[in-house]
Image 1 (cartoon, rainbow, N blue to C red):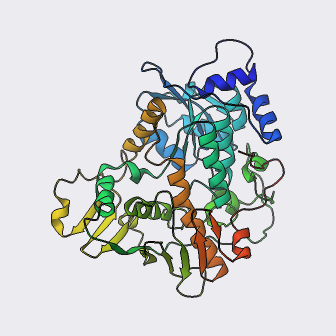
Image 2 (image 1 turned 30 degrees about the vertical axis):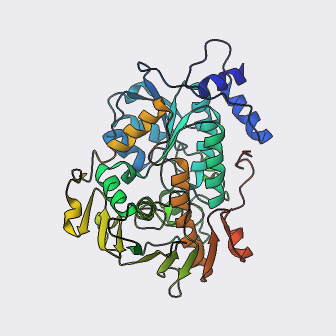
Image 3 (image 1 turned 90 degrees about the vertical axis):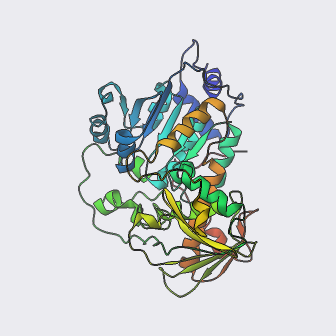
Amino acid sequence: DTVAHASACSRGLKPTGGPMNRRHFLKTSAAAGSFPHVAPPTVLGANDRIQVGIIGLGGRARWLIQHGDFGDARIAAVADCWLPRCAEAAKLHPDGDKWAKYQEYRKLLDKEKLDAVMVETTTHARVLIMIHALQAGLDVYGEKPLTLTVEEGRVLTRAVRRYKRVLQTGTQQRSMPINIYASELVASGKIGKIEKVIVCNFEGPERWTPRPAQPMPEGLDWDQWCNQTELRPYHTLLHRNWARWWDYDGGGQSWGVSGWGTHSLDQVQAALGTDDTGPVEIIPEEPGPKCKVTLRYASGTLVKLEQEIIKDHQQLGAIFEGTQGRIQIVRGDFNADPPELRKGAPDITKEGPGEDVPHMRNFFQCMRSRQRPNADVEIGHRSTTICHLVNICRDLGRQLRWDPQTEKFLGDEEASRMLSRPRRKGYELPKIA
């Protein structure tokens, strides 16, 4: 029956008979706002090949299809609400003609016997899809930024823990050996107490203004694409430049706060050792939507978004200034003062194809061991929350006090309302106890 099927999937097993109706199971559980008990997962057998589905086939997914190291995992199925993308993505992989292809991701979850999915969709659609995958008994590789709102992140974290699944956030610097090494230098006090951290002044999102409708591309399910957001008339600037707009992302795929800014702010969290917490104050240093922002942690450490963006990937990190030295961590490398701190460091991780290999391997290893991965859901949620806090601070134009334990603003109801957003009917988040 459907419950037995989901329970078997949750344990890393394949169901052994009886009809499979996973789609009905997902729909009824979501409608009820609950989910039956899921038995603890067991370890995948050493000879079991991991079956992976990919949901969302934009630029990031195509990069991973072409350059990612899936090891003993196999891509078995793909889904995209713009159906022609499935065939386009399949051409990039030697086994692409064997993939099952879907326009509706729920059908993929229903029909395919998978162990994991990689959710590479737009930010505004990502969390609901990830939760449905978790409820279907699958482990998840979730692209960054992990969430659109703080509320989404906490619900997602509860879901991962409730269903005893593995979730790896796509912040690959967490698995680069040299980044891990440099982070531990900072966290262990090798440059003394950290007084200030400097990162780029990453850009925030813009608000969408109504525009006349444009012709719909063939094969696009626009309702599914809009997901939780308003069902607006189709426009190519929404569809193809979604990361630019507040309703769909927090600042863009590249030099926005929740775009590549996620990498830098996650690097800050890693080196400060604050994976389960965050700042206590968010302070705008000047007026305007692109203002510099200071984050103050309870330790007194100040994180300043003030460095000018020069569009160099070396800026996808942070500069840590301590009482006894200075370390700049970038993607795949670091600089140190005193320079002897580099002694014994791992090799540089070269930018480009191959830089994701340690992160994907860590995900697949944790699927077997059932250990938490390097960028576990709580880590991804906390780092992405900082992106949201910066955007809310800029939008309101005032200093905010934040309680990272309760994840609430102190004494500011208007700011607190911005921690969640209304969701369109049919795309509500399930209730996760």
